Length: 76
Image (cartoon, rainbow, N blue to C red):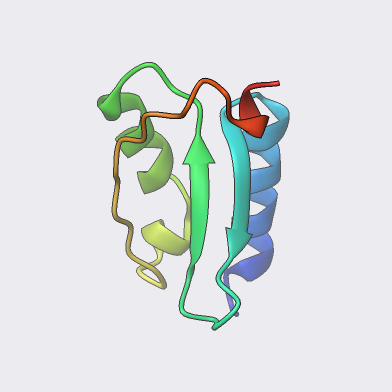
């Protein structure tokens, strides 16, 4: 909780900059999911490592490339 405000501010900044499509916490409180819009894996690694939660060691991160279905609601 100590870094939550900074984490949420970071996510809002990246969302407003078009780098995040969606984000949210898991209902069971075990973490959350961030869907980034980037061109390369290196770019998403850099963005994820700048998250205050990750910087402070409060949360880790796992990166998975996602091939979005072209009929997905997110593509509209």
